[in-house]
Image 1: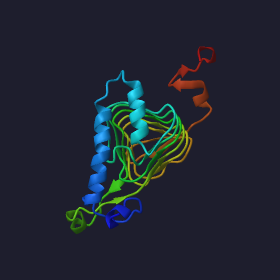
Image 2: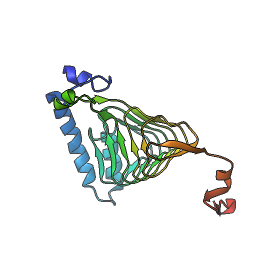
Image 3: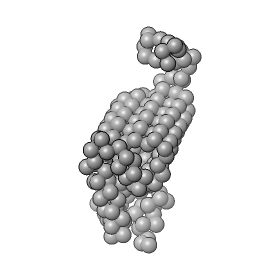
Image 4: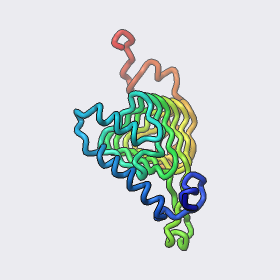
Length: 204
């Protein structure tokens, strides 16, 4: 195994153009290409491919095609009943962890890869990777971007278009660029599902 390959998951600087890394990445990308060519009606085939592609694939995981991932999802670890809408981008140069029942809106980017601020190092194409953790039963709104190394706590809602640059705790609604906690999930949310729209228990 190459010295550079050893650094994928350590947070150290490395060169992503290393021959061994590129060879592995291309094999993963080929599987992803096959997934993105499936028809919507090929539900069983998609499920089988996800189990081959993803590092971990819980029961009931569904990712709408097209799906994009640097390593074809190899470093993505999805719990049970995770749903991702169209155009999920996982920059999975290192590990991405997503808990059970989490929902991801369209055009979301989850990035683990970063590049040094120092221009001389960027000229040499150095990179580093930091894992991303998303908790159980989260909702990541459309167009949100999660940056390398962040953690989102259980049950939290990330508003559409947010840029998550720091850890977000559990049980909150957080929005903005940079993403900040707006409020706690509260008793109000047990009564209303949208603005003044009440939750009517007999309809559930």
